[in-house]
Image: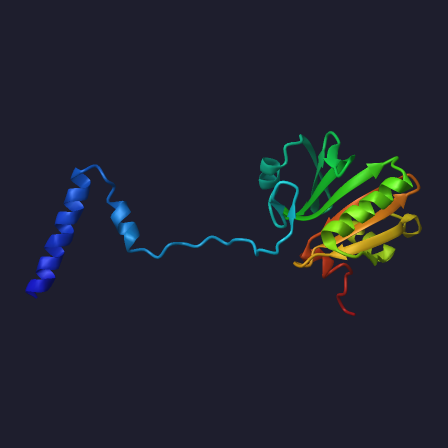
Length: 201
């Protein structure tokens, strides 16, 4: 009992000393609390441009993307697109971020009036980052875009489609969507694994 009483007195004196010396008492309490851990992305998680990651909200993306952006809503999606073109490899493109329930799930670069040589150059550049390309199904690309803007793409206009899958499951697609325009689309693992509606099948 004497030992317990002595321990209580020692703690009271220690707290009094800290208060007198201008230190916050909460600092001592913090020593006895289990620190809260923050969720950190896996080392292999896909990162876009200046550290943008899947699941970020619009404010987090704006904080990392220096280009001014316009926002609009489409069905249950919100879209942010850059007002001006951004640099991609040695080209410029329109950049579009797509969110559902304020979570980033898809990104695209859209290139207008570039040549076939530019398309081939970007194909090789993507291969140098993500490995060998595979042939991509135009129907899969259309299904991804239809979730946001139904019937924007016609399947017969999606040509020369190729794709890559990153270690974390991000789907990357390069394809023509008209005779004079092509795009690079990045789809989050969440979307890539559920391209098609399969309810009831």
